[in-house]
Image (cartoon, rainbow, N blue to C red):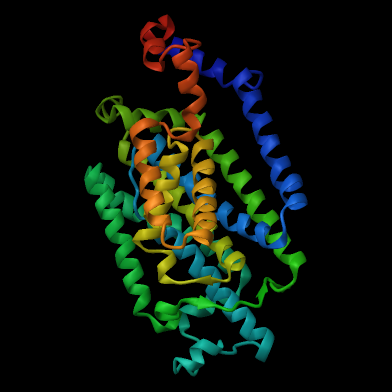
Length: 378
């Protein structure tokens, strides 16, 4: 075990080639997002890319929970929706205050028959409370759910079904709540923390915020997966009983990854609202949750970059294809998913590795691990 730890520490050292390659890729992505994209894309396309980046943030969390932890989560729309609705409610209160003064009731609530702001809305009038709620509430819900689910050793298909049922229940709950817009959701936001949303300069700034958040999330996930906790998460995925035998509680390890993924989804939902300008139950139910997952599967769930690539590529393909053939996207999405699962199980991110393996440049990972003397002694 000591030898194995030494090998891992050496591989993760600051001067290791893999770390330098990762940092170079990170710098390249930053240059593309902050330099190339604003220079070549129109305001409309840049706003569209900001929307795709929100999906990519969700995908990084799913990659962590599913790819590293083996938790097939089909309900990330719940946490995405929590972040989105928290932000939307704050923006509606802020717009009402700018229009009619402190304590004013948003117009849609007046139309729904409310004469005053519901009490549970009141804390969201504060920007600080709203931001804290966006960061904490989705993760807290995930911790509570995770403890109930994983402590009872629910996993595999049962966990997937439970998470999907949760997304369906959340969407149905929102449809019946007129205090959050019912099936129409919340829309027509005019400002974002005091900045006008109809100003192109402010919309461009939102893109930079989304891009910076994605890079920060990727960096955090990258460091997490290279830590001792990241190794334990993979060990739980592959050999849960052995991890339990060694004295660790696999449930706690899973809960932590599930909470991090939920926090990422909540942040993405909060950014999605000012970027797109609307949130409704249709954005947080079963179908969006499955769409998040398909993007991760197509990109490659076992890598850090794969979910980002998959989420952006699938969202871009959906938009492009829907513009030309509005009714064809669903069929194309299904075919794409079947093709990747059938012929490229590792997703688009594994293309280079597959080509190298077929050319004989590298051996299969399983063969390398089986013959490595230092790991054989672990």
